[in-house]
Length: 162
Image (cartoon, rainbow, N blue to C red; front, side):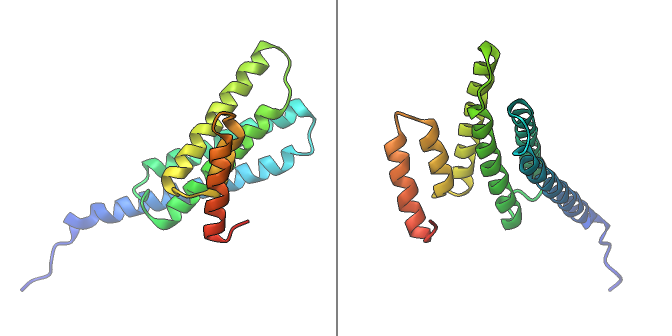
């Protein structure tokens, strides 16, 4: 029996390399967003809000990279995606809380709140009992605040996560 031709399986290695590159790029975006958000806290409100929105955008790009990679189901990719979604949701909510005068400011705050809600719900898709996502949703939804708070407390106690 002669040597096997493995070239027909080469696409699997290419997919893995592409997935690893996407994961590395998403990780780098997360680190850059973390740094940007950290440095935003020392800035005046309008600059802080701008930096926070940019960090949210970076986290969202990282999430999109993970979604399009060949690794979306791997545990590290899911964990990175979860962290990016939760961080982006928190920062979007923080950006929304910075007062900006005028109708444009109200519109930006509403968009940031919608983004935060969407990201928190996406986080729950990855981790159905995530207390942090539930707390974010409790802050956003006055009508359902008590229900989300109760779920957050329950899920945190299940995980022994205060």
